[in-house]
Each structure stands twice: as C-alpha cells, then as structure tokens.
Image (cartoon, rainbow, N blue to C red; front, top):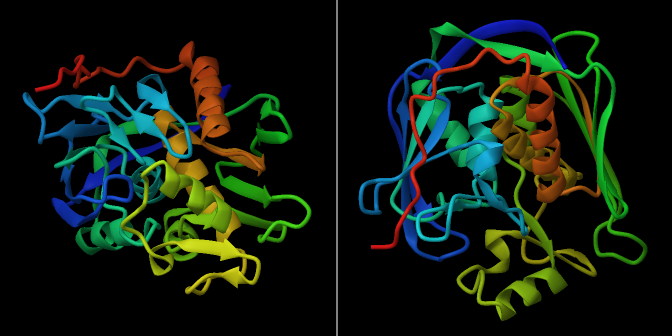
Length: 302
C-alpha cells in the first residue's frame, strides 16, 4: 500500500446522545458520543460494566462476524457495531468516545440515519493531527465460496464503492447493483437511510434462535415472495445500498482512510473484516505509529 495524502482529523463539536431499543437484546439502550483528542480513534466504553472497560474499534478487537460485527469478549463486548461505525466513518469523525449503557447500540430503524442526524446537529471540528489516506498498489481480493470483495487502486483521493447483491434464482430479492462515491454528503443522503433487510426465511430462523422476537415487519425490511412485508423500500436498490453501508462500517476498523474502488459481490461481514485485516497488514509497515491513548483490558463478568 502507499499513502496518497493526508487530511485533518476530526471529532464532534459537542456530545451527542441517542436512545432506543437494541435489535438483539430487545432492551432499552443508550449511547453517548463524546468528542475525543487527536489520535484517540473510535473507542467504545461499556459504562454499564464494572470499571467501564474500553474496546477499540479495530480489526484486532473483532470476535464474531456471524450476521453482524461484534467487538470484544462476551462479558463486556459490543455487537452490531457496523451501523454506528458507518455513521462515524461516513461523516469522517475520526476521534470519538462511544459510551454504551448496554451490549449494543440502539437499533433505531435498522439504518444509520438516526446517528447521522444527531451528529450533523452538533457538527464536527478539525483537529491538528493528520489522518493518512491509503490506496493499494495492486488489487487486493478476498473470497469465500461464491462471494468476493476487492479493492482496486485509486486514480485520485476518492473512494468509490460498488455492491452486487444476488441471492440466486427464485429468491424474494432480485439481483441489484449500486455504486456510490463515498463522501460525507453522499453518505448522509444516499446510504444512511438504508435499512437492515432480511428474507422471510431468515427472520424465521432468527426467531427460532430467540433473536428479534420484539421486532415486527415495520421495524425492518423483510422480503417475502411479493416484496417487502408491511413496509416500503426507501430506494429501489435499498438492500444493495445497505450492504455498502455495512461495508463502510466494517472498513472503519482499519483506522485510516481508503482511496480506490471497493467492489463486493455477495459479500458480508466476514469478508469485510477479512479485507480490513488484510489492508491493515499491508499498511502496517508504513503507518506512522500512533500513540495508543486507550488500552483494551480483558473484561470480567460482575
């Protein structure tokens, strides 16, 4: 990898608090986003746990990519982090304390819109420290089965993302593709409102495992044979757009900006995190060593 340039780091201009129900637990949860010093990065703090343990948003913190991205151990980890990380990364908020009163952020409507609106209401401030913008020297590809995810070298400083969604013949979701140049404005308008989606059979499987029992069709995009059940899409290709949103949230775990063209085909959290890990490995030898202001201690149950 090589550095194309730098930009000023950014943090929030003021604290932000968002409350709601967690998608996984069904419990009331609250998250507070706090301004942080330069080079802090994005750091979760479980203030509902003894000692308020912290977990850095980094690929080294990932403990599960099963249907969502989870950071940290079971006793004090955070799950379903991709939407709030996408909102922060998409708006170029580089340094932030993310204080949680529970094991997951609020699910809201399954999108990143509520987080984006709250952060846009207070705005951001530039900081003295710089953030590197990296690109790959040649295409980097990860794959699993029939799914692929790749990043191609950049001609400039821009990041473009493409996703091809294809559930196969006879699926309730027709194949769809979306491409977007990633910038704070485009992210807020074109990706942030796009919601989590599931097929009817996936919902049944989750309910059998005890997840999502508190959710109804209007809370998520659930696709049956005739299309969305009890709901309407916000964009004709909303599912493909949401896949890009998830991709951005997972790639936030790199800790640096990425320029180039990122192309996903049937990929999900596992490949997103695998690509992020590969990019960190490639950049590691050239990254300026940033002081780690926050440690991530091992957590223990109360």
